[in-house]
Image (tube, rainbow, N blue to C red; front, side, top):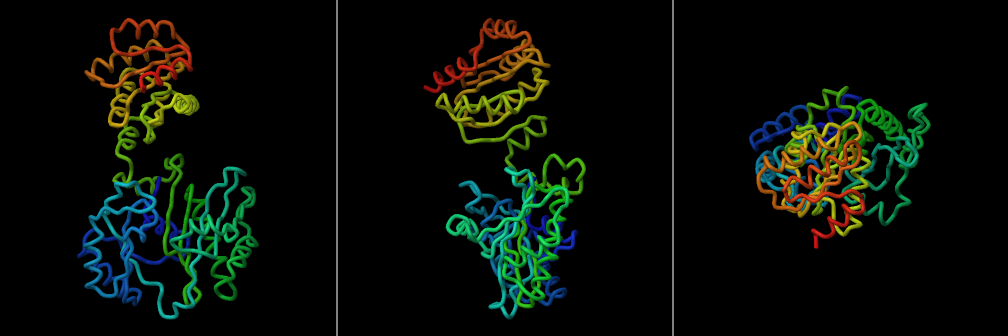
Length: 396
């Protein structure tokens, strides 16, 4: 589950990480009020206006701007709120901005002495350990740094048995070229950041930039945070931060129906039970010359109602040119799934895309008989390759 910048910063601050302070605003008037409050609390005269969307690269898309007075705060806020923001990390359609963060200006006098770093905490799936990734080259173009100068990207892996050790935090501060007060501040920052990541059950914390101010403070100027969905049952305070407006509408609807669904860019809708079988089915579709339009695991209780709901979800995608249903009947009986397909087909009326059904396992013979005798425009298959061949045929 992705969070907005301001939400990520709230989590960081709760673990003692110094952050660039800010206030959320939904209108230009609220933005001006927020700027006045920040001026009273921090003394800052300039403010940074940041669009709050689930995407990086906001600055490149015009979603981050500096306001030097209250008039500019109002003008810029009015421009950004309601705009469709397109960044390198959004789709071509972009994302609508519903709210902004009015933040203090932390690049105060002595800016020549400031320094921006990059830092993230995430799981290294190759080693099964958390790691801290960091660089001396923070800022908007960290992707180019990784591509063109990979030697400037450092990593520090954390032993799960010991957690982050003090010498590792010092090593990171040393590799970032810090000394004196800034060195000590960075070691505290790293320790607090890792604690925030670990104890919030996050899958990623990305801070870009981490700023060394002209008076040697270390703070998070940005925060890109993803919480592990599987841990939300014990992190209800974070679950409440979910912003459904930022998520794929079809995926949200599928989740409410209890379906495991991921929207993709292909032309063949998939309805499968079991994640492993779903991945294999998607591979087979590609080998047959198609592209999966979705990942959809209906689970082990694929009754008629569930199958019908899955049909409706798949058909919301106008790019779908065929549907492949691939069910292995272990706990669930194949004849029940077949009857669910038939009932769903009849209840939904005309379905204008070819449907290929492969049912294997318990009562598979009965299931094939039901499909073949239904009189509906549904093709049955027995072998995996046979199903793929039929998909290839209907795609032309």
